[in-house]
Image (cartoon, rainbow, N blue to C red):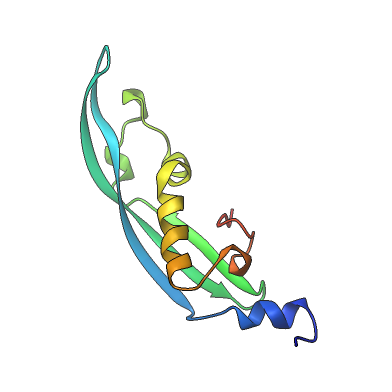
Length: 111
């Protein structure tokens, strides 16, 4: 049906751009001994079709990352993405008919 893999990959494109604002929790204050205060912020995730790579590229950022203190036991931005946000994004994309094979690295990771 397709003349080559490139043509097949191009056929997977839906829209050029999707944006998600995904809430996630972080430790606002760690008191020790398993006691801590939790807060929530958003990770902004963009999914863009890249014609040169024949797939969607996922990028993300946290506008309030400066409020998240690693000394309280928090991860970095990539850690938050890997530990929960990525699954939400991939599930949303899948529900729109965009599966891993349409993503640049085939697993949702574009880095």
